[in-house]
Length: 248
Image (cartoon, rainbow, N blue to C red; front, side, top):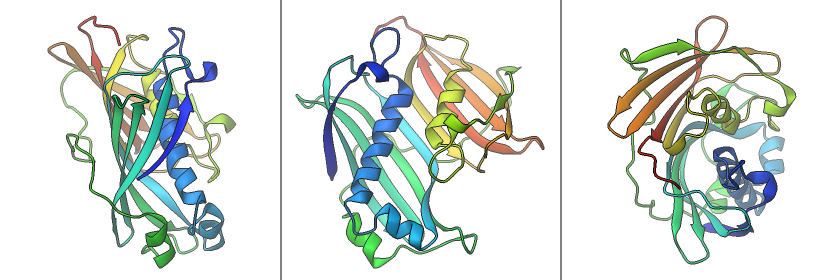
């Protein structure tokens, strides 16, 4: 298990002084990056070999989002390395041990010089000691696009510089930010989400979102398909919101 402590900053919260979903994902990404940089398979090690971890899927359960200045612990638990695949959990806890959010993620080690997945190396195995996976409901990484429900086409999204990461393609958290921005309820309480990444999008690409909404008791399920110019799916994001009116 790898952890680091932090305090929720003003730049990370919304108008209600609550941590944004985007910032939560940034914390998780930072946590895995910190663990990587502690070596021996650092980002420089990966870059020299033309390889990198590519995210296939997120599943995140949110129990409560912390508020401004709240002290938190962010952690990650790698629990499987096999062939080109890496599976790891993430979590955010309060100082008192309250679990605020837990996540599962699926990664592929990709050789960009050869254009194919590649096996993990001894250095990578050493960098990520494996432990037991965290308790949560593990769902399928593939997200089915519903055939029923309210369907609407949202405004096109052009990929800009601020969407990109160090690999020069859209950062995985940015797709989720785009999808959340398309919800009918702008102040919706998100209780869980999944994201499945199918293709990479690059600077100046145009994404064409299709949104499907289904009601499920006190919840709404938004399925957002971000498509390319040819109608191919780049990323699918499924967002479950709480409509019961309870506060975080």
